[in-house]
Image 1 (cartoon, helix red, strand yellow):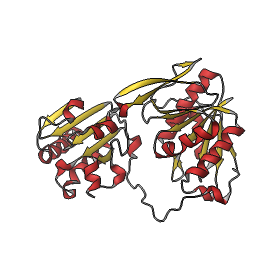
Image 2 (cartoon, rainbow, N blue to C red):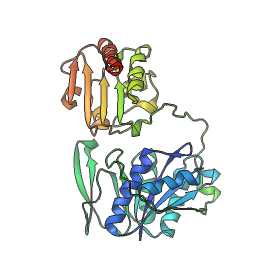
Image 3 (cartoon, rainbow, N blue to C red):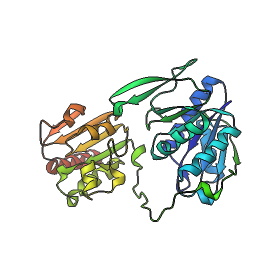
Image 4 (cartoon, helix red, strand yellow):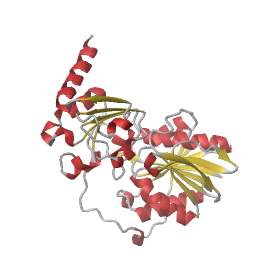
Length: 323
């Protein structure tokens, strides 16, 4: 019996999200009096993988197969299943991002495992096994009891946090038995994220909507994000109109995020958008319409023209840092 956690890397580097998953898995393993095994797929150095030990992973398994350079749902599922079986894993932990959404249901079928998606806390009970998750696009929560022998949990980002629990770590390699027929995805082109801060892991997010009136007015949004060390985001209409890349779209049909601080400039606050940001710790909204729905969700609201307020906010931050 063990806890297996799948950790993703970004260009060969583990990120905050990976360490949060290991922290979460470590908590479960401690409660179950067992160990944590982390699984990495991709070309990641041994020294980088060893960093998972800082958060409780006593073993890290590395799969470095060139055929897995591109996410292929079927092939990744088979590879992870083989590792889970070899490790006799009874609990599998993954992120609830695009990879988790694609792979966790497949693993659930192949391993005959109960699946709890978008979990927000460690299990509250192990006999029975009960985990709290988001429901209705984050507007409410439910406690899910899992009765299967193997359990799969996908964790919502920024819901558990980083918790150091240093242990000695052994890094090993694993070669999954994959056939050419297991690969069905072909990538003709790709668009790599080039921002400084990964949106799904950002502590601060500066987002804007159609109230900006055009892509040519996005300069202050990017300047504020740079000042705060934040990620930039946008509403769906902005991405659909091509003002900003779809990688920045947050909402029910985009990325679901949970930063500590979320700025919404010129965003009306449609329910689909709110569903993607409702787990933010603090929401600050700026909109010229005092009846905008976003104000019902925001912790702080400013009624005014974003074209005037954004520059004033930037100047205030610069002035406060100059003293």
